[in-house]
Structure formats: structure tokens, C-alpha cells
Image (cartoon, rainbow, N blue to C red; front, side, top):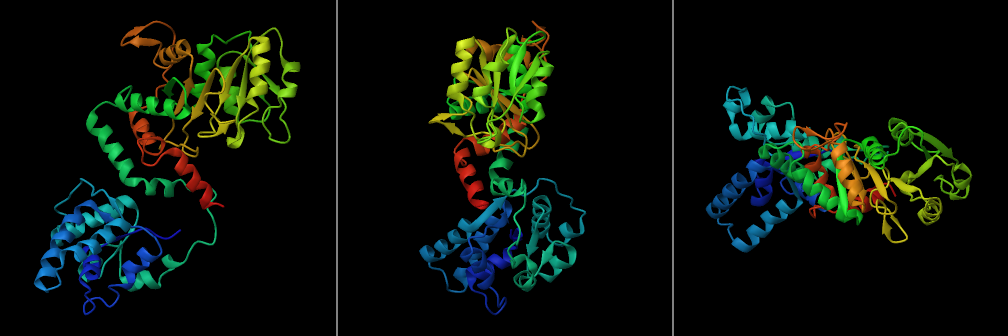
Length: 407
């Protein structure tokens, strides 16, 4: 991966004004980013300054031809990723005393954990984040990585940084951080994505499965069929509900639960089959649903690893009576913390899960049953809305890009 950098105003203006006498690398540096389709950063406050100085200087130098000049400027903006200028400002800071514009660029670079390319020696003397164009073009940052990171959570978020920042600001200024509009909108959008009638945001994937079981009244004395090959949270959800997990071995072709072995594990105490879509591969849901229908059992999907997967054209999350999702940061759709959701077409279950996850309450301070604190916070919901919906970009596109990056 290439290092991310912010370009100082003078670097961009050198390119726009073709200032070869000042910066011999005026063309080489920006063209490096443009020709290699690598995005560089500009802090939001830089945009108006650069445009103003560009137009003023182009007219002064007799270079101003509006269509061509603005096309060049828009080309630069097209390849830039615009990041937020942090609101904090310390007028006593040495860099702020020297140049407030440089100080704001430095603040943006600190927030983005990146370097600044500048030819301003005074700026470089006051900021350890600065490097010259020569340093950058001859440095290690031009060398592509010879390994692929096993788990890179940073790059997808950097790609969506402006949208994520907007989601954060929107939530911050709303003043509503639990059970607010962001959570409601995410639930609506994720239900549509999963092709279900209902979605309830919860604290994590374990909460999702646990609350489904509780919502169906499954508890002490009951048994739930589970895969023997799964993450521990699947079994813990059953144990937390007070029921007994009954393991069934996997199909060695898929490592998902083997439907041919399920009936032998069913007893008079069995209440549900908890099918896990392991590694994003859907379990054999037609066979599992047929067994469940014969024996009068609920079918619950553990879809923690399968956001976006389809089974015979149908979305995971809509293949049984209910499904539990996890938004742990490493998932296909990951929060910046933790989160989870329940999807279902069962309106009665959806209402029970919603009440159970909010201390057993539908109305504030009126607690009908013994519930849990298992809500999805509005900040996480707002951040999840960026890759999962609102068109920026849809989750499916993100999954395709992620697959291509490791192909």
C-alpha cells in the first residue's frame, strides 16, 4: 500500500500554474498520483484558498483561460480525497503563530495519520510531518508492498473517510445517541438490504442470537441444534438463554452443519435449529427448513460472517424464522466498535426482541419484563449506514472490491 499524504497548497499551485522555475518537480509529483490512480489528501479548508490563489495568479500571469484552467483544477479535485479540517485550534502553538493555514494542514495530517508534502522550509522546520517532493519521490513510499495484510481494517475506512466523518458529525450534533434516528434509519435500510420486513439493532452478534432465542421463549429444559464447527458465540447464545446446545457434525464439503445428521439429534426437547453460514457460505437451508417444518422447530440463522450472501437467489438473513448478524469490526460490514442486528419477517418476534433489548421496556421507565441492555448505539448505526446503504457505496460493491484486492 502507498503512504497517504496531504499536499500543501504550494505543491498544488505549482502544478496548476506550471511553476517550473520554483519547483522543478511541479508536474512529476501530481502526475505520479494521477497516472497511478492514487488518491492524495486535501484538507477541506485548503480548497477555497487554492482556487482563489490559482485564479488570481493565472490572471496576473496571463495564463487565465477559464474552461481549460478550471478543467485542470477539477482534475486535481477528482483525484483528491477531501478530509476534514479538525475544529481544535491553539493560537499559541508555534505553527499557528507562524502560519495559521499551515497549522490547520498539520492538524488535518495528525488526524489522518499521514505526512505532508511541501516545499516550504519554514513549514517543514515547525512540523515533523513534512517532507519535500524529492524526499517523497525517492523514498520508500513509492515502493508497492510485497505482502498482503492478513486483516486491514484501516484502508476501507480511509476510502470512506469523508462519509464517515459526515456521519460522525451528524450524530454528534443531533444530541441523540441511543435509540435515535440513526439507528431507526439503519434498521430500515438493513432490513431492505436483507429483504426482510424487520431489523432490530442490538449490541453485538451474541446479543442478536440470544435475544432471538429469548424472544421465542426458548430457555431452561429446551435443546437447540447447533453446528459442532462454529465460533463459540453460537453455543454461548444457547447457554445464555438457559437451553442446551446439541452439536451436529459438519458436511466435509462445506464445513457447515450437515442436514443429513440433524434428525438423529432431535429429541422431544428440541425447539430450534441454529444454522451457521460459516465463512460467508450459506448452509443448506432448504434441507434444514424441511426438517424443521416436519418437526415443528424454529430455524435461526447465525449470519455473523455472511452479510450480503445469497442462497438460491435469496438473501441470507431471510432464509429462516430469524437471523442474527454481527458488526464486529472484522466482519463484511463492520462497525467502529461492536454491534449486531436481528432480521426477521415475524412481527411478533421483532417486537419482543426490541423490548428485551431495551431493559424490557416499550415506554421509558415502564419495564414490562426482565430485559437486557443490548441496543445498537446511534453512532455505530450512523457509521454502519455509510457502507451498507445511502448509496455511498452499497455493501455489495464494497464486498466485490475487497475480494478483488486479495485475488
